[in-house]
Length: 234
Ligand SMILES: [Ca+2]
Image (cartoon, rainbow, N blue to C red; front, side):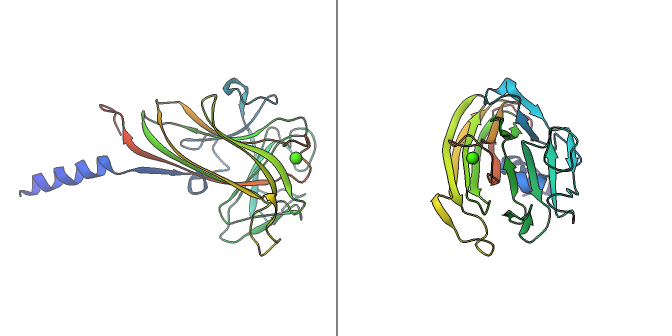
């Protein structure tokens, strides 16, 4: 085989290789959206796609919850502690160890921590498909509040539900609190066809008790582009 043929073969294989988008590995407090990820919330207590709003304010030093900068937050509006514009939030542990947030919850290395607002607005993370293709979607939700999280968690393709579950309990790092409750974790794995710019949304609501008190819920999410649609540039 000629060198040119070998190079062509390598390029052909690279073009077929799955592309992984990992919420944790890609996370940013500087950019929203960051690559394929958007951090945000719903304007109302509806998961309709037109209710999505992007967070505009990030905070690496939350004086109320974590003054060390190990956990950062995205908020709807500028805020250093609970009050207008604080909830819903999307937080992230930037370190390689579990960290305690607000003295009431533990977030694992690279884990995203989400909490709805007390009026039922969802905390949302959205994946926006960069190209059309076949994608594998994985999500692992866990109650991570010591007060035992009571939330509803969802994965949606545009406005269509792919997965709905209730979190009731603590399912995070057992070094901080024992795993406890009726449903401390919930996981989704599925495969779907996405057109370019279609969305997969990961949502955390305030649960059946309709309060966000003690509701912090962890999320790990991965989206893998298995194969692009014919004729799609990769
Ligand atoms: Ca709740």
